Image (cartoon, rainbow, N blue to C red):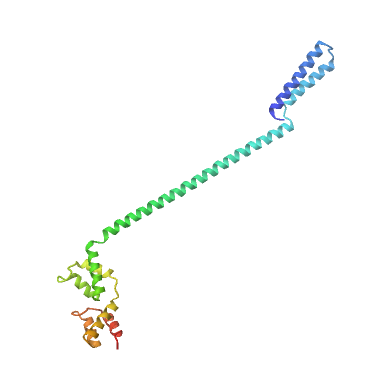
Length: 216
């Protein structure tokens, strides 16, 4: 029995006890009615007592309240964990984005600073000599730095030579074919012309490649 009903029963039994006592006092005055009134009075106090049903009901209600409190606590904790996870994920994404921007900025700044315009010009000229005139690496360098040529600095010329995309063996072969077909030179003479410091200035390996691939 829940508390409001127990209070109601207490008041009802107490009222019944009072009315029986008053009625008996004014009318018969018999002891058994007084006894009955006392029984109701005691019963009214018993209604407020700690009965098994009351204890069970209170335990059930307490259990429900505790369970509800635990669920609410778990729900709040779960929400807190999810918010922490989202916050951590956002922080990681922001950090990653910032690092990427910083890296991109540094790369752009580094790219714009590390290659002087003279170096780029020397590379363009050197690539033209290698592609159109089939010159050797050494001949391209000399042409880029010569006072009678392009007059680039040695640093710019070295940068150009390091970055020219050319197959020097095929350049040597192309020159060797010109000497063979246009001047009818022998393989030995062609070799000397390819490797001479006053000629094409190819390396011995490049010249040997050219001689080996000439028409027999």
